[in-house]
Amino acid sequence: MKVLIADNERSCRDFLQDLVEQNQDKQVSGIAVDADSSPECVVARELRRILDGCPICDGSFRDHMYSVLATVVMNEKSDGVGRLAQFLQYMRDCRWHDVLGFRQWIASADTIVAFAFRCGIVTVFSPADSEAPDEPLHLTILSVEEGKKLLAVVEPVHWMHLRPTPHPIH
Image (tube, rainbow, N blue to C red; front, top):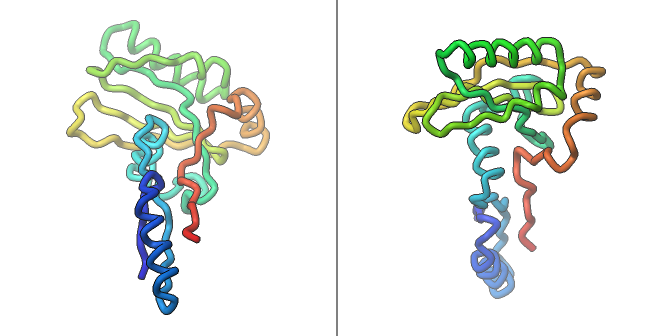
């Protein structure tokens, strides 16, 4: 029997543990699924859903970490268009300290979100309409040197696991 168990469902793990102990001929294996509703876990789940695998290294998300580099509100006003152009220029020029300065968010506005992975950067269009899907826009594969520079400016506490760490059932 294989099962998926949310990591906040301690009673399920205890029940399965008891089942195995009482029935020595049974074997249960499974993966604990991160069911946490914290913003970080919700973002990680959405990224996995949107990207369906790492578009940069063309692999699964095993051992991947991400960080939200920037958020830029989309609007058609001249200052909004200018700010977006400035953000895109900073991204092209790998001016990471400047990119980190973009932290706009308005729930009722379309937004561009830049996610850093250790293997590169993915920008995602996040529409204000909650019914509309988020869409990847652009990906950037970083050279080893630029990747190190990015890692140097993003504090370690801002890197989050994209795939939850499995908690084995004993």
